[in-house]
Image (cartoon, rainbow, N blue to C red; front, side, top):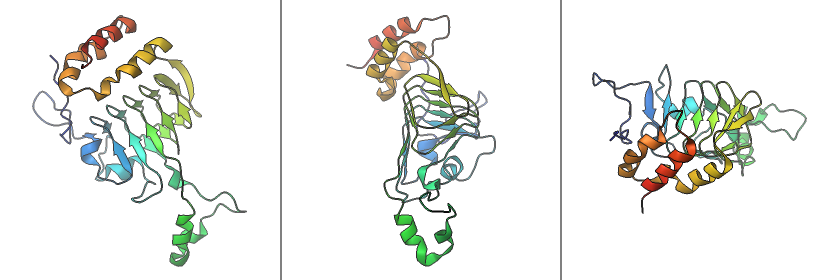
Length: 224
């Protein structure tokens, strides 16, 4: 039986010689930020690991901001990906978008209060965010989405879609609608580790395995 990655380890990938891969971190372990919501075993990789992973990945999301960033369980975030959350926006109702009040301490508080009700950014479970992808404010990615390298993603992306480009568009769906409905109902990302470990051969089955066959096998592993 394949062993599950250690969700409590800061560096979940360990090489055969026993050394940890320090360019990869479990986000729930590496990030302590009130505006982040992080599922188990979600990881990020960076060729130049930062001291502050929250600031590297979502540089405009400050503690106490009016919006949140949710990263679902088992998400995979590649080097260079960034989340531009809604607090990055400038006012657009006036003649100029220049943020004059941020340079005046007496005006800053009222300026900041004007940004209430900003949209949250939600990344569903088992999403793969490719190298250098940019996720824009308020984006909502369904479960199992793959974001191509360098894509610029906004709005809502349906589950199990592959998106690429700028602006990102859906290239195709990874499975049929019926298979996607089955996967969403199974919600394997919420299973306990012992059942997930047993299900890994079906979750990681390689082509030419048929999705329908592996989904059916996965259903048999579902906890009662």
